[in-house]
Length: 98
Ligand code: SF4
Ligand code: SF4
Image (cartoon, rainbow, N blue to C red; front, side, top):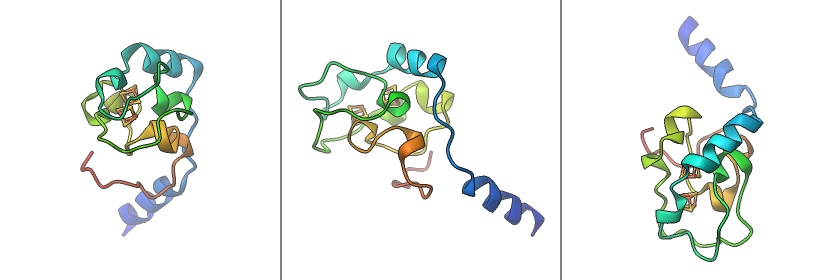
């Protein structure tokens, strides 16, 4: 019971915005350029920096294969379309088994 309550409280915390250093690291390590959805874009690091103004269609997301997944404890997909991890809803949009 005690553990359940702790888990709920943890989940209810607002997600922290990425720091400047994390944003820089995401930009450097980002593999979006290999993704089928990465069309007409040159920016990177959407999971930390926020979404793309150019990518609109979900054609696959390779974020689960990126080093930043563990680094930032990412729980979602399609950061280019839906915004940074901190901007996405509390309930993870995709149950991808992260
Ligand atoms: S998790 Fe996705 S958006 Fe974030 S740096 Fe990696 S490939 Fe880019
Ligand atoms: S955030 Fe995901 S869907 Fe968007 S370009 Fe990067 S890997 Fe592809």
